[in-house]
Length: 288
View (cartoon, rainbow, N blue to C red):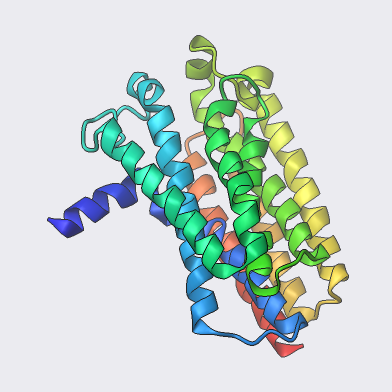
């Protein structure tokens, strides 16, 4: 019974999608350890992982709660946990509140700066869910929500900011914003009919794809800047090349005339891209 309940909530927040931001948090963590006098501790790694999980649970749980009526109307999302009755709105909201409190608690456990910034992080994480109601640029706000991860991990170790993790944040913002635009191509007509905002709904399928490509061009530029910033070695550039190659592949398989492979582009390709970039970057950091 417990496993079944956990499975339902994991499905509610799409726990598997943690793969998008978590690797970048680990890069921020590794960079902090490799460029400062701080030593690795299992406790600190657990703190960062807990902060990541509770933050994402808060964000996704609230998104599903806030969008429950919209999801019920959309044929693509009507079978999600809340509109289908698998999880009640009340239980979903309790889940969100508990995870938000846990996130703040973990931030307090980490260090003062993390604790002071935790309410700001929660505002971004929760606020994203309402942006589609008034701006087409909601995808960028999602990117910001995910982009907090590498800076947050670095702060957890050091208690201060640094340039490289902030560049990673910019990378995640444009990368996630770009692939979220691709994902939103599935709902263009639905969004227009229900006065919801998105880049594809405003600029059309072709316009949405063009803006997604532009965002990913900026991503590539930041990937290069980040590598130059910490004078990376060959392994970083190998990971960067794989990451960029997967971005190109993503746009090659999603075309205005054929949107059938959006699921592959959104989930599988971006998940692999994140893992490859993080793995090679962390290996490069550890060997310097």
